[in-house]
Amino acid sequence: MGDVRRELSNPPGVHPPQAHYSHVARAGQTLYISGQLAMDASGAVVGVGDARAQARQCYANLTAILAHYGGRLGHLVKTTTYITHWAYRPLVATARDAAVEVTAHAVVRAPAELIWQTLTDYEHLSRFVPGIVSSRVVSRQGTQLIVEQRGGARLWFFSYPIRVVLASREVANLFPEIEGFRTFRVPLKARL
Image (cartoon, rainbow, N blue to C red; front, side, top):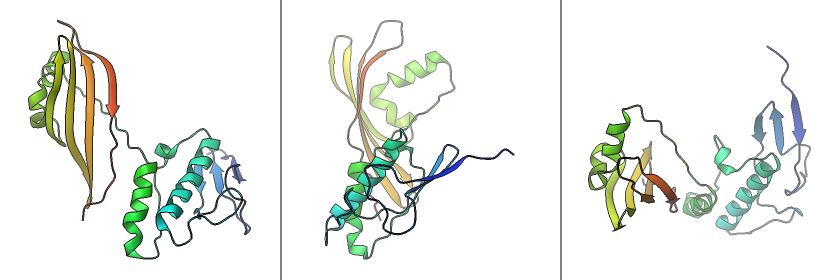
């Protein structure tokens, strides 16, 4: 096993640490980011008495650190949040929901014709695709159509509502050419 390059750094855009520590420890291509405080780049405390403002600043710090390395919040694998009182949880969750965007990809292994038949049976997709509660054609003008899908994902006791609107153009005997895909805000609200 070769030596992994390691470095400690304090990227620009976040407050310089007041104690002897670094915001980031990098080992190879992996970043280990220290806990963030609600301090702006000048070191001033943000949002005294306001848990939402403090959480927003912590996510802004994380965003700045990740951007320095060419990343974004979607690259985070795990975060741990410490909250001083349970009543602040919804306020911190609101800040997290505004900062974090969830994306997902899937690979489907099936004959192309079967995929096409299933995907264009818009009104019945909820029968075939896990997590979709409803799927409907919002509008159709010739070969142009807008499809809205609603559903959700679950992880332990968290439930994530999802709404997707897909704009596509169907071409006879060919697969649709996707013209636009917009994922509307996907709130990460825990439902207990």
